[in-house]
Amino acid sequence: MIVSEKELCKSNKAGSSSSKRLGKAIIALLVIVAVLIAALAGAWAMFGTQLTAAMTIEKLDDHLWSMEYKGDYGFDGFLEQGGAKSDAEMGDYIASFLSHGFWKPDTSTAGGNYGCSTVTVTSPDGAPLFGRNFDWEECDKMLVHTIPKNGYESIATCNLNFLGFGEDWKPDGSMGDKFMALASVYAILDGMNEKGLCVADLMVSHEEGIDQNTDKPDITIVSGLRLLLDKAANVEEALELLSQYDMHFSLGRAQHFSLSDAAGRSVAVEWKNGEMVVTDTPVVTNFYLHGDDGTSGSGQSYVRFNTLTQRRDAAKGVMTAEEVRTSLAAVAQSNFPGENGGEKTCWSCVYDQRELTAAFYDTEDWAHPYALSLGEKDWCKKGE
Image (tube, rainbow, N blue to C red):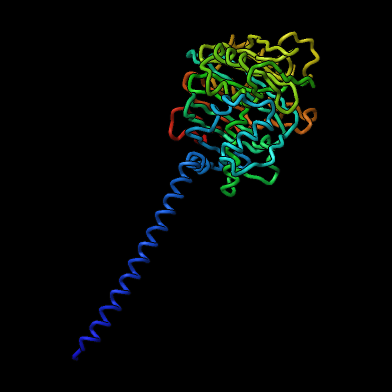
């Protein structure tokens, strides 16, 4: 077949035009890919820490999840901006930090009463142990492992119902649900950090709240617990930190702290008549230890206090972790049928402050604890 010079020229021009179009298409595609990569890189730089934490959320059982947050969750920024005078104010800050201003939920706070018990002892081999029952109505729970950018590693527990996201919300649903669950870092109720400091929040059966109002920065009960786990190595440091802030009670009800450190000191921290007061005590339940006149707690709270005190005294303050568990079981809500208004012992923990481990018992399931460990990659394991 003979092709004329004119036809050959047309063919070359068509090929050249097609090549140019292909080249332009490739360039356009590369530009789009570059823009997408830049957008993704920007999104990762902005949300990478939160996305990583959200993807660690795991359902362990009905009403129970775990999560690990490694990196900056904004707590230093929260303190630098003066803290917050209410849980709603704190919720606004959390939402703004976690979403970088793109999301602002309704931060109404759940209310209610809850009872609890704590006891501190020493194991036969000299390890300090801290036992804790959290008593409330049935709830969703989160085990929270935090490795902050500027603070101590810790393990802690959260009642997810206190976040106020509604009955139908679950922390392992959509990505939006998971992002909301990150707020549990700020809403803990007990825990232990890498220095062996244990903290717990307990209700006082009393209507009086507190709103200190000086020139100090502000914290609430729950943000106070996060402050202590992140920044305090022992009881002395914890008390010094708390003295630097104005305290505002969460839930509008009187509460107090039970603190215990690896050196064996254990105290109750209370706020009465606008002042912080400290009482050295190995047992705390739901009445004021400082200046108790017998009216600040329910009858049951005194029974639980006396039971734990008697057991501890009989053991001369020395118990195995199993004996601490048995003592917690003796004051769990199943022992008070008909007088607890539907309250349950939602969880129990036995913290080993030397080994930096804990046994977590979900709703009086004493046979199947979860083993929690600080400094371990696999920090949460289901017991046999």
